[in-house]
Each structure stands twice: as structure tokens, then as C-alpha cells.
Amino acid sequence: MKEQHNKFIRRAVALANEGVNSNCGGPFGAVVVKNNEIIAEGYNSVTSVNDPTAHAEIVAIRKACKKLGTFQLDDCIIYTSCEPCPMCLGAIYWARPKEVYYACTREDAAAIDFDDQFIYNEIGKNINDRQIKFTQILQNEALQVFENWKSKTDKTEY
Image (cartoon, rainbow, N blue to C red; front, top):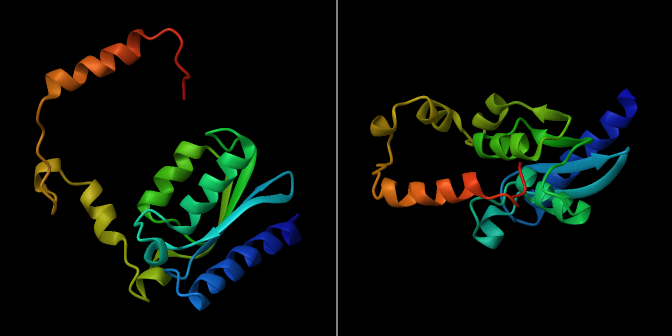
């Protein structure tokens, strides 16, 4: 089984290199595997598509969900060339794969100026102490939508 994991992580690293060579974005690649078969893959394409969410893991998750016709990746494994950033970590948890393998660490990424530590720090702060100003408005109006969701009988739970 270890050799299978190595094969898939090597593919994620190869995708990261493809992204670097095509100037699409940062040096990151990811694959989603189900039943020992790659069902989706992606590399960072933030700068080529002008989308700050186009990280390798997000690209691969989107493709996998589309291919499987579902919003969850049950029984899937994600292989990524680097420990996921906070955004990708959140997406991974929402997608609910059974496991994640990664090659480089966030410290390795920070060493080449992909440092997400400030985001980890921001998450832990009180919302009023964050670097970007957050202002709450119209909560009562918005809560009505939550009430509509809560009482909806034909919703798809997730």
C-alpha cells in the first residue's frame, strides 16, 4: 500500500511542477483518489485564472465532486504536494475525504514566501482585532433566511 501512496504523492508533486513550468500559479499540485484510481487532479492556477481560490486542492476537489456528482468525497483520499493552507484545509474538511497525504510542510512553503501563518493567527483573533475590518449589519433580516432553512422540510443536509 505504501508504494501506492508514493505513486499518488509523486503525481501531486509532478502536477506542482507542471504548474510552475506553465506559470499558472504557485508550486502546488493535488490529486483525489478513489478505489486506487485518480479521479481528479489539479495544480495551483491562481494567477492564470485570476482566482485567489484556485489552489491545487480546491481545483482537484471541484473536479472530483463534479465527476462523482456529489458534494462530499467519502471514501476518497487527497494527495497534495504541500500541507494545505487554511482555505484548502477548510475545503478538505467540508469535502470529507477519509484521509490526506502531503509532501512538503507549511514551513517549507513559508521558506519560499508562501507563508500562511498570518491567516492561522487571524483565525484565532477576536473578529474586531483582525487586520481586515469586519462590520456586522442587518443581522435580523439575514436571520430570517436561517429560519427558512431550519423549517425547510425538503432540504439536502450536509
